[in-house]
Image (tube, rainbow, N blue to C red; front, side):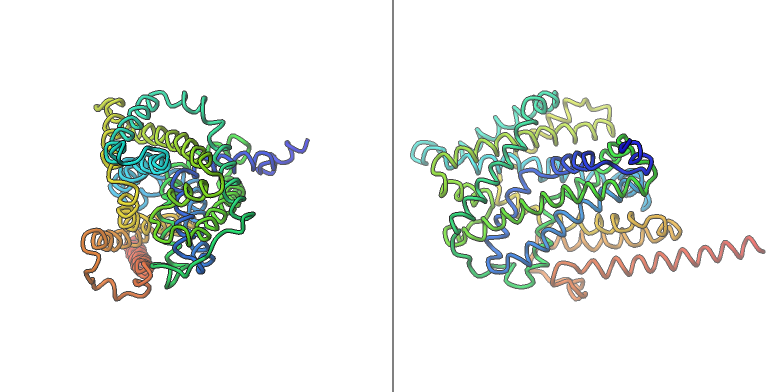
Amino acid sequence: MEEQQQNARGGLRPSQMLMVGGMLFSMFFGAGNLILPPLLGLQAGTEAVPAMAGFLLAGIGLPVLGIVAVALCGGVRELAGRVSPLFASVFIALVYLTIGPFLAIPRTSSTAYEMLRPLLPGSDVIDPNVAAVVFSVAFFAVAFVLALRPGLLSRVLGKFSAPALIVLIVLVVGASVIGGGGEVLEPQAPYSVNAATHGFLTGYQTMDLLAALCFGIVVAANVKQLGARDPKQVAGAISSAGVVAGVLMMVIYCGLGFVGATMGGALPDATNGAAILAASASMHFGEAGAVIVAAIFLIACLNVCTGLISCCSEYFFEAVPRVPLIAWAAAFAVFSCAVSLLGLDAILAFSAPLLGALYPPAIVLVIMGLVHARCDKLPLMWPWAVLSTAVFSVVVGLRDAFAPSAWLPLDALPFADFGLGWVLIAFAGAAVGAAWSLARRRRESRCQQG
């Protein structure tokens, strides 16, 4: 009776909310989500609280809003297509490439290797460069084979990897809390100034907003199967489930950030969170801690890598069916293997300008998608707001990648010093698009009357 009454109202039962929330958590939480908070905590030091607040806004708030926006608009292609069909094709392809072979897939191998490296013999026994190449080739060979049968890895490991990761996090964080932690240092650059803003920009590197644009329609379909009906009910159900996933991720992020902050005295010059977690586990659990961390990261990263190779291959096979699916999977595996050899630090450094170029237009798309009914009444708002933001972010991203010390006239815009100069551009583009839409509407009205 309770279930019937709940379904009659179009909502989901608490157990269903928890199930969808758990699904959202599993979809979003990967290796990148594990390695970013510890590094933020270490580098932010005494400014870790405002830095983490900004990180949570970008790393949790934006992805949940992205899922809702995609659900309301009927899919990412329908959302981006409001700008133009060409933009939708290019933007969606770039999103898949970014969460695939450009960044996320290579990062899985690099992260897994970083966790395994402390267990390897010294450089007098094995050359670290040779070890990295051998590991990467073997890792992607296994991932490629499993990507052709993605259900196999999910059935064998899917039920164990996520719980094991959570247990590991509880152990590492709990040991840091009980042990009292170490010295929390003064903040390092860039968190020494405007820590919250830089925490927000660091949240880009989770890539979860981009993933949300691809996953949103899948989540919406699951919510509809559970009883939600019209768009408002679907959005409400997804939002509620997003709170469940968001709270769990927030607790984990804050715990990992605490671990990083208390490791400042031991690893003041650390450059990635994987090394911080490995050192913390070894400090509290000895060699066993390093072994457990390496095993769990290997399983989780292989699982994520397989899923991403499969997902990207499927998308591009549908777009270009003349190229066989196995060829797409092989191309992504080989390319990702080559990128992974650059090392985790280099991948993380490269990710900042690329994600800085993609995130601003994605954020504008999501915000407009949440109120798409009103924006659709002024259709020129879509291309003006999104494309002007995209042009700005691409120009700044190219500068940051190839000439970071160069000055641009765009740097004179308000909030540009904080990496948020695109905000004013987006508002200006939306205003121009709205005015143009209204002017065109009045023109058409006069023509009809005449």
